[in-house]
Image (cartoon, rainbow, N blue to C red; front, top):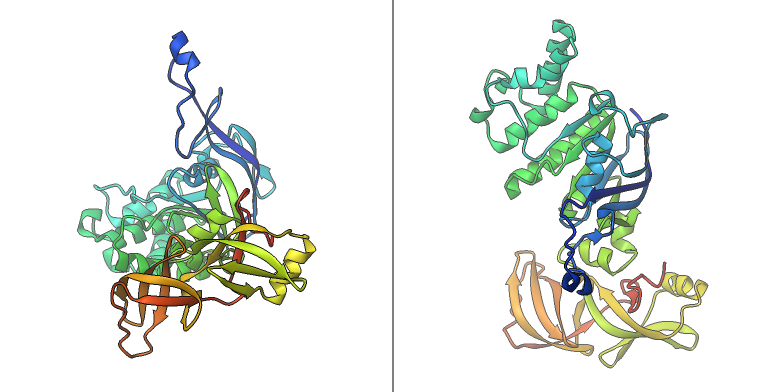
Amino acid sequence: MAEVRLVNLKKIYPNTEKKKKSKKKDAEAPEKKVNLQVTDEGVVAVQEFNLTIADKEFIVLVGPSGCGKSTTLRMIAGLEDITEGELWIGDRLMNDVEPKDRDIAMVFQNYALYPHMTVYDNMAFSLKLKKTPKDEIDKRVKQAAEILDITQYLNRKPKALSGGQRQRVAIGRAIVRDPSVFLMDEPLSNLDAKLRNQMRAEIIKLRERIDTTFVYVTHDQTEAMTLGDRIVIMRDGFIQQIGTPQEVFDHPANLFVAGFIGTPQMNFFDAKLAKKDGKYCVEIGGISVALSEDKQARLAAKDVAEQEVILGVRPDHLMLCADGVKGKVDVSEMMGSSVHLHISTEGKDVIVIVPTNGTASIFPMGSEVNLIFGGNVAHVFSKETEKNLEW
């Protein structure tokens, strides 16, 4: 068990293409590359990454493809060199320590099992390399197999196992090493939706049983919300927000976090933040909604001025009413316990979740509806910086 500290971590992949000497090319503006910052040194994949992971904490790095989360994990593992900054595991600086000496174990998304070995031999392989006594190897492998409920598969080879069973073997191979830090790089991404849900529950139970430090990478925000003690949301190599799942859901730091966390994603409107009788309110579609007391206090503490804003409201926080923001139903999706309405309003396409409460709710295409929301669920973002004005 160990605390992990990442201090000003930076990763640059050097440019490998030869610079062209053509004057015409030099005169042209550099080509923009999505999700990547290109400098004279090379492509910057991760920068200004600062994070302290407590002993036995479960941290999830989450973000879209190309945001730098897997690169960060690979730097912790020693599979990528650190360009700048420091990596500490416990009280030991790990920048130049070989991966095998870092006391970590990693689970990859493609399982990486030896096809010619049995499950038992796959799990025992790393211990055999360390010349661990046979009886100790046998004890650890059988304990891990019992935890993961794969004892009955110990004599089989990987090709005779399902995807979920193979992933359990890969996790078991990491468990037997009894590492200080457990790294997982999108371990469930190759599984179907049902199996992914089952394995997510298994990982939660596993965490309780082996009680070590976890660093988990995923692009799936549902995994991040259900697994992490804290989640680190990344974009273009930068940390956008760090917090508990509830904190980042209730108080997104910026527009990106607000849109990334939550399913379906948050709805956004053009609105105005105004003051009436000294109280903040948002004005949209001819209506005015006063913000809740805690939001009032945070905006007042920062002395936020009246301004045009981007208003964010989650789909399950929008309600149908008799008089509100006017809209028209484009699509109605029956989801069983609720109906998801796709509505055109204020020049935007928004989603509203309407509970059915056991009765059929019919909203024909083209139906006119009115929307309202409470001041406690309204999020206001700056149009210039895209930051949450409360924080």
